[in-house]
Image 1 (cartoon, rainbow, N blue to C red):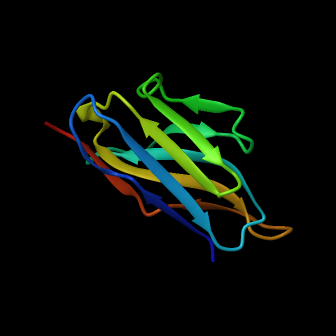
Image 2 (image 1 turned 90 degrees about the horizontal axis):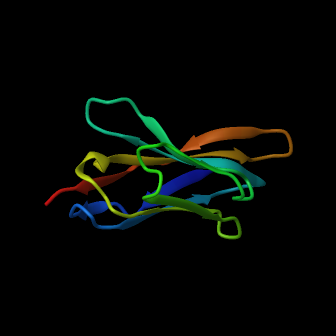
Length: 121
């Protein structure tokens, strides 16, 4: 069974940095596009950044552009999110998402369990 597990969240002061990781495990043929979403209390989950299969194409939401950097290591089936210059409004639960080929004929969408990021002084 395929699982996505996020790690790296925590409490950080405004202006600080955190690095999130999302590791995929299980029987995996390929991992296609991946992305990071976040959901603040009382708000809808939103896509903040995505990355293509090879990592050559990335798309950032305006709210994080220039501060966050997405990357992936396909050899490790892992995606990263480097978050710099964090603001209180970045406080949310962060979720990773991936389209994963699990057999020769089946590709499914998977979510991680989420990791909390809190930006506060």
